[in-house]
Figure 1 (cartoon, rainbow, N blue to C red):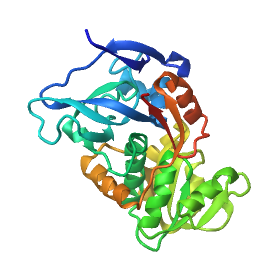
Figure 2: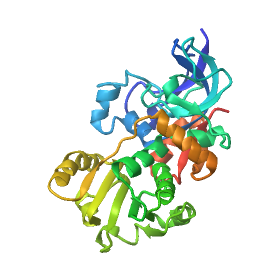
Figure 3: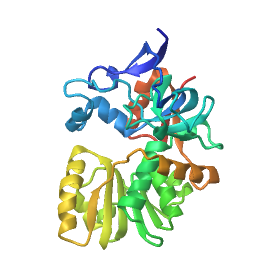
Figure 4: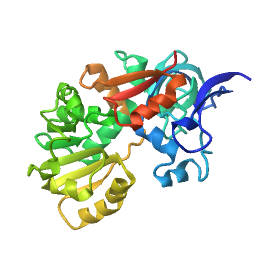
Amino acid sequence: MTTMKAVVYTEYGSADVLQLKEVAKPAPADNEVLVKIHAASVNAADWRLMRADPFLARLFTGLFKPTRFQTLGADIAGQIEAVGKNVHLFKPGDEVFGDMADNNFGGFAEYKCAREIDLVLKPTNLSFAEAAAVPLAALTALHGLRDKGQLQPGQKVLISGASGGVGTFAVQMAKLFGAEVTAVCSAGKAELARSLGADHVIDYTQEDFTRSGRQYDLIFAVNGNRSIFDYKRALSPRGIYVMAGGKPAQMFQALLLGPWISMFGKQKMGAVSSTPNQKDLLYMKVLLESGKIKPVIDRLYPLSEVAEAIRYVEDGHAKGKVVITMG
């Protein structure tokens, strides 16, 4: 049996449940390709699934322990090693990147079998590490601003959590779409937000934007930690609030109270969850190759230190993305 290294978890809990093991190397089915992974990035989804937080995550991964899959990691970038007989878009040697969230994750490993629809050719001007930083975070930002937020040129947009993985992409995209962008982050990350194009930066430790009296056409809250009614107060009369991740209370409010508030008023409030989408990833590839969007990488970790990388992301320290490299 041919083996590979992978980080696995067989029970829910803190990052201590993650173990680097030798497991069977997968073989591609007729409609799959085998990717030799060069880099994978960490997302909030990884630690939430690891901890089964919120509890409803267990409906997706397994009620008492993770049974659907045991290796986390959605975003990958690498090189195709083999292709199934029904594969037409790719060939061995192609450099690709993609989001495995709809294909049982598995990015924190040396190899991963993927479907054609999961992948896009890697931008020629990006390293594997930079490409791995893109898929889930960038598409969450795109879907939150363009689709759920219905962003229009000239609108005033506030991005809360502007310095994290999703936030750094959101600031750049909002500016690209012609918005006036206010970024909310800590003072230590303000310069990063400005370098990405933010017109205004609010240090959340010094100012409460929900009580400043200023109103915004769109509020995009990444890992939000405020009441939905706080955000509502900072919206313009026809404004839109979009939540992308957060504590269970914020998720509950966005998913249940948001539609109710939207039904009885002109403001719209709700949540966005990124879905892997080859068409939109191709769109991102064009933006990346043109230099209009760029990934921001905070730290690189080897595969043996996935647990430490997840701890760092879970603690909320990251400026942009944290990436795992495969040596």
